[in-house]
Image 1: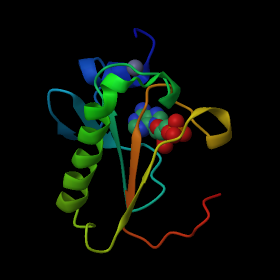
Image 2: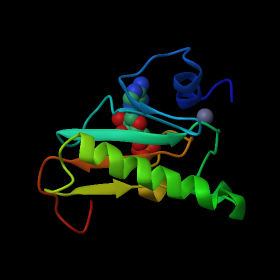
Image 3: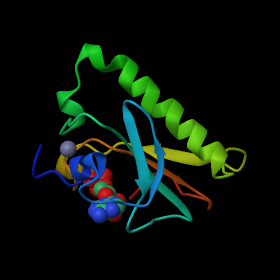
Image 4: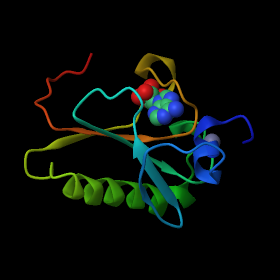
Length: 114
Ligand code: AMP
Ligand code: ZN
């Protein structure tokens, strides 16, 4: 998608603070961190919202979660804990329409979320 910010990160047209990349995934630090560690993990393929996921994307979502697990370990927050968040559409506050998993950690977090 030519007008998608996160697709521009994947192609290198814009360079975020990258923390991880493999054949299918890309991860970078959130520009407006909500916790000491706040990283976004995205599929390289443009998928606008969780509603567009298909059965064939099962493995991709598994990879996304395992990449977040690895990054959490690299960041040293695996033991203290972390939260993975996927927002879909307006009620959840999705603002960038290329799916992304938030990895948040480094502080205690309350529940329920706001
Ligand atoms: P969401 O509200 O779930 O769609 O999350 C979008 C996230 O993208 C927010 O946490 C933003 O701070 C983050 N974001 C927006 N622009 C950038 C950027 N240029 N670099 C890194 N993160 C960004
Ligand atoms: Zn995109």
